[in-house]
Amino acid sequence: MAVVLPLLPLLPLLLLPPAQGVLPSPGCSSPLPSIPRPGQSHNLPILIHDPVQGPVSRSYRVHLAKHWPYANTSPRPLLLDFHGWTGHASGHERDGHNFFAVSDEDEGGGFLVVSPEGMADVGEGPPYPHGWGSWNISQSSGPLGSVCETDRENWEGTVCYNSCPSCDPLTSCEWTSCYDDIAYTLALIEKVEDPAIVEFATMS
Image 1 (cartoon, rainbow, N blue to C red):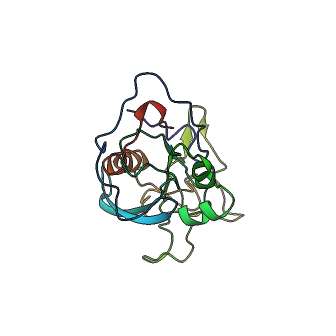
Image 2: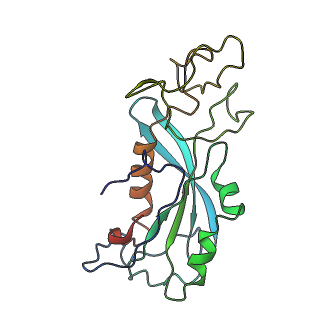
């Protein structure tokens, strides 16, 4: 089970049709959670053991399809829908990224939509004033050297997130959070696979 987060962190992947040899998650036949109910979305907390930052309280948004089978015995696909920079999960859902509506239209059960929440650790302590949700996708050096103009004394410096202690506004190219979002995504998948039966063969 792998998630290719660094390659397309801001774009949801297309769902594939159910494949032969379905691999259901451990949640098969378990009672549906009290929240969200079918046809609803809800923000939920999750504790992440970040390899660098330590224990971190994070959150995510989940939408259970309107026609999700109450028996919870039929494996359904899982879609991970990441918001863009400065966004957040709830706003992403409201701003026309309505995969939840597509899921609700499917009378055969639909699919589970999970919208991760990027960290917005910019400013003086939570709740951070800018609210610039982001993913750990930036660095100062690439295969060909610096990825940006690092001498910025004559123009505006970059914004450094609190989780990036080595970031310098005038000499660094980092412009996103430094929390481990791969660890977060893997923990998120493990979290949702228990109460809702997920079909791993069609997870995107």
